[in-house]
Image (cartoon, rainbow, N blue to C red; front, side):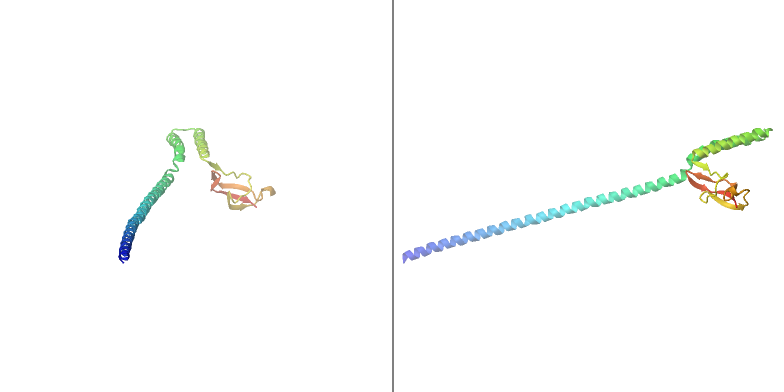
Length: 194
């Protein structure tokens, strides 16, 4: 019986040690889990912080793009306004020498007694003016013996044609028409033969 008692005590001790080991192991497992959980939370917090940083960067980039586009829009509006206001500068600069010639002609007209010389001077100024307009892309619409074309001409009168060949053709030009770089800027006003 004493053997049984010793065995029971040994078994009891073994069971107690096993229970203590199990308790220690389970406490250690719970501690490990507790340590793992903050690590996971830290990871989520890191992800959130990274996402917030990325959002802030993208928002900053977006705001910069909007500001850049707004500046571009303002700059192009200003450039267009300058083009509209100063677009004729090249043409006006080219015409100024003709204005100078006209001023000189008017000053000297009273002193001139020779009408032919005045006529020649005015003709030279006119030719110079036509040349400058041509350099700017302005061309006269030819109407002499031309067929009537509604794209180029405006019929203001119909007159009897002097011959059958002149029917539907321009008989007379009342006002000369012009094109600017192949675009009609003023139609020729003409009389058309019937």
